[in-house]
Length: 333
Image 1: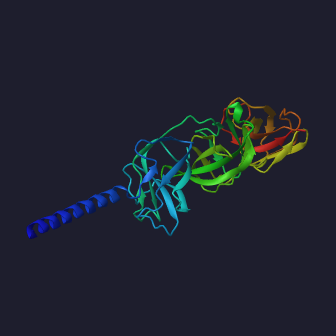
Image 2: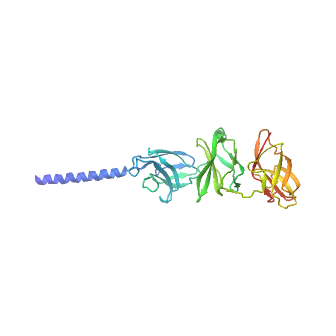
Image 3: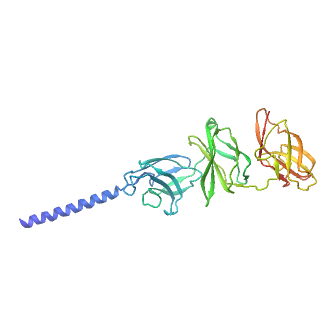
């Protein structure tokens, strides 16, 4: 009888150990994990997607705020690819706008933690793909070099069904080959395919623009372009702050180049070479000023446009380098 009891006791202990191991494995399998994204997830740039995780994750300090990070496959915790959101309440979900400027076509994973140095929880590898964006930039182009303290007309196109929406425009700076949100330059404007931008960016470098609806349900990104700080402008009039009106008399003022005689042209922003709007003067004297020009840009009533003036040595081809004014505004009457 004693033997039987001893055998039963051992059997019970063995069963208890098995149950404990099973529960331990089950508990480990149920450790805090991401609900979305997971290994089967494929999201697209420009979408808004729901990130979901278990808020009671053991590796998250549930008493504090958390941050959400995006990593490229193969990158480590000391070199995070993108901060999606900092100091978010650990409520188990976050609506993520997948920024088409920052995010490239990658295999990646997410991490949620108190900060990037702590363990946190990590998602399975998932995929982000490129998408066809409805907004397309006409200007700036990849070859454009924009000058600080000048007016530039941003231009874009989009489907007709989006033209009733308001839009905003953000500027991204390229840092270590990655775009970083630099500032919002147009907070809210009509989607009429163009908008003047007074460039007040001191830092020379490479940039990109992003245009999006205020609801962020549609967007577009520009090519990379340069912004430079011009130290000594060739023209004092017109300049980036100049606003002239058709029919009024204005004086063009520039630094003398000792060219003897010069030709003076009016160009619309974005046009180069022989595509000028008007030849203002033929064989004018290079004395640094051309007085009493009756402003004529062939604008419609109440219309306005962004232009620049170009001066070249007399009788040279219009594609000669010459000197150019900053972009400035001409208003219709």
